[in-house]
Length: 95
Image (cartoon, rainbow, N blue to C red; front, side, top):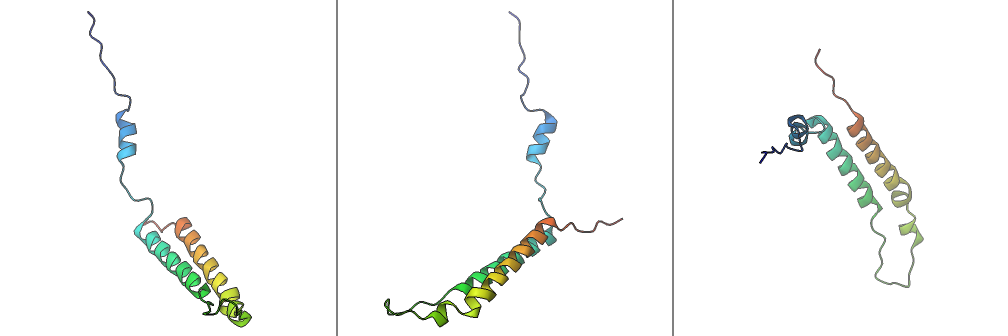
């Protein structure tokens, strides 16, 4: 009987690529990402509120305030822009 050898399906190079555990972004980028998430959360917190004890009453000055209609969406968009910057930012390399 002929003895057959079974070759591994994954080569050494492919195995090294899968096991590579380097972070995707540098540490500085993760700091920007956390800052962007914090700004987005602040924007959503600014949008909260306006509840009433009486379900039959409606106070448009609370629901349609500057803080909820204008300021909060601007803060959220700024947070999203910080996130885009955090992803696209490439740190300067030492030459």
